[in-house]
Length: 202
Image (tube, rainbow, N blue to C red; front, top):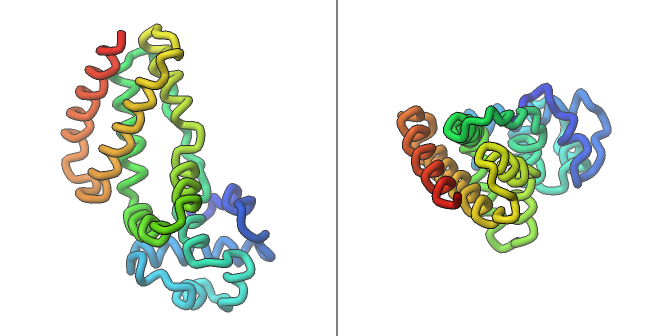
């Protein structure tokens, strides 16, 4: 999950190079603060510039569009490690569910994601880029965990890919709707359902 200090990955993103790392951090921090406090609509370039103490040209030199900046601020620095397999399928899927729910329920993510999805509605390429940025290589890691825990060859990965998509969609809907309310109960019910589906593959 992104932090205002951890900007290494966002600094090497697909948009322009930052001129000043200190200003870059200030802008990213200001964007995250405004997303948390005011929501997507309140995180305007002008408001971000005022909060960060920079001019709007400084922002536009680095991020040509407001959505580029918000995407970087919300998803730019992926510092949280994926769960290490333990050999216990239930425990491992529980750890993955907790990770996804916590990450998606983060106030910055909850503010940024619906706005970005709406902004990219007519730009399939940007939408796919956003999804890929969130998922990165985690699908493969999830499939490897399931194969390791069950002893089932990854040639049947299409089934695991579907289960992974169910994990993402269920935690996304829950996080955006309820945040972390009753998170433990949701996690336990989700894990039980996903483990049942995985076992059905064996």
